[in-house]
Length: 130
Image 1 (cartoon, rainbow, N blue to C red):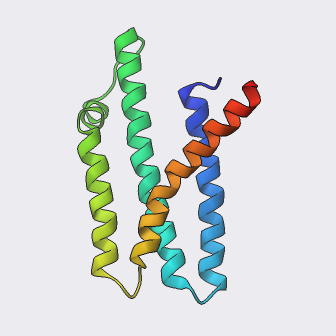
Image 2 (image 1 turned 90 degrees about the vertical axis):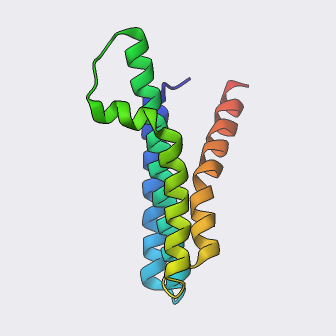
């Protein structure tokens, strides 16, 4: 079982590879709004995951008395849900404001892609344990 840091590192690598593939698709195909929507959605979704990771890290370290954090870290931990909801709303708002540049369905698909990555990781870990 990986620690939270290990899982976040793995998710960062997977998201980076997928973003690289979407960027290649953006530059090599004529479907620029779709690929840009996927890139924006996945980037905002990764930021949402990062806020959850940061909240977990801060609360875990403070509860165990290991480390003191800055006020910025406490704010991210405190307002984590609001930040995540705000990121989702901002992501969709950008797609609605610039429909010729960002494809709305692609933005929503990119935003939900992080959850598919997490579920796939859980299934892989379950398969390794068996």
